[in-house]
Image (cartoon, rainbow, N blue to C red; front, side, top):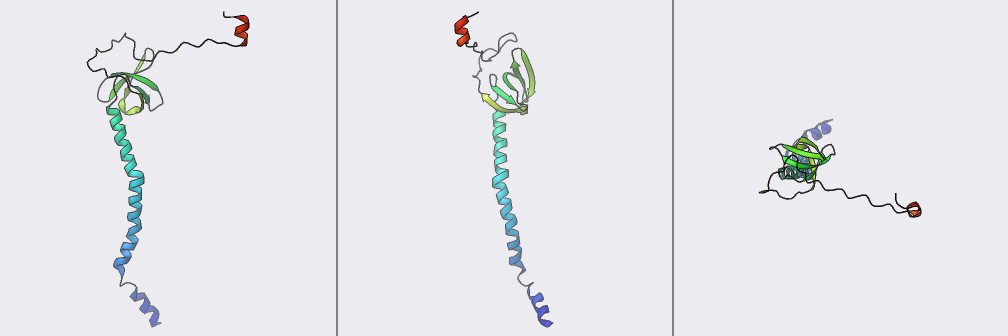
Length: 141
């Protein structure tokens, strides 16, 4: 009866080292989270900000909705004019851009594009001629 009470009282003497042993896994988990989650996310946000700061006229961009367009005008700090198709221009917020597909040429010192002037969209190639068995037999129309 006295022995069990003695063992129970003797366990509380070394409490300082137990606290450090219990705290070590928590510190280790935080370090792992920092290097695997927090730090890569910060680098990704920094790269996104640098990309958005470098958007200029002539860049082909992808929006958050998956729409590909050509930047025709930088309206302000947070706004762009993007041409989606010939004659279809929309204003978008810079932060909705997820990627820049191709960089346009620098236009500093060049004249501004007029509204009726053709944008820098690439010209579509003509459809190739179809050559097959029937086309060879009957000729072209």
